[in-house]
Image 1: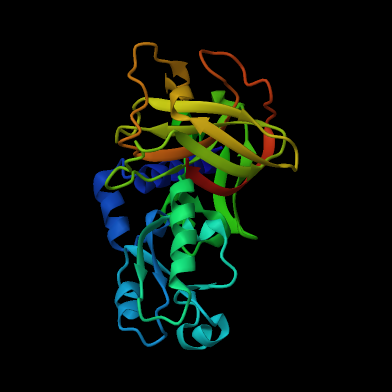
Image 2: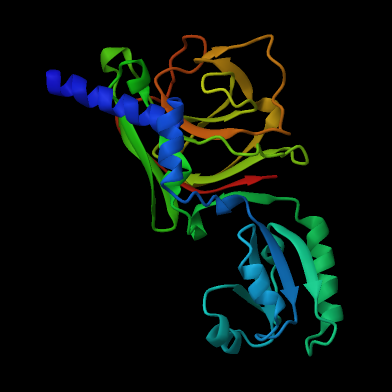
Length: 306
């Protein structure tokens, strides 16, 4: 029993350190790591630039951007740049090349059909209104520098969870227990600094595969550790991929699973954090209709703003 109590205290301490509720320890730990949150980087699209263009290495060295280049010969360009840039064949253009693109730069002296490509880009740039927030299918970020477990150990429970990258998905998994008055497991991002401004969008889109349980997606528009959480519950179908759209207007303001009727609407201009949760409770003391204690797993491909 003593060993179990010590283990629970250790997990609680680690949780508080990770989310910087113990300020000194949290800051000290982050100083010792390199936090690269590249899931929010913008993309620059270059059209018709050669392998030897001085512009390319300048962009590669900027940590705030990804680089995507439309070229005439991908194989030749790959020999020179390797995997440092994303190369697109000018004869095989698809609409997703505009994902997250902030700036397009053309080389007017290129041998490519610039007029044809620019028309394609203009058409798809106006149609594409989604922005990738987390693309777990193509991530080179250390996920545990951004996402951390936040389980019922904070209230004395013994549930445990984690999030890992495997086979091009993020897997939120663990074991949820109702012992010691517990009953929830979750993973949450550290606060975004600065907060994300998603006011140009209507909501968030999730692509995931579940286990038949009902989960909650949670976001916050204030930086408090234990402030108002805006929640959306969704059901999964066992082993079936689903696309779930969550309008900002449908997020329910709650505080510790109780609805806050006088709360302001979700402010999408300052998104501080995201969270996935499996909980015994729905809202206001009601039970989750699709909850079973024990092992769970939720595979997440991406999170977009739409």
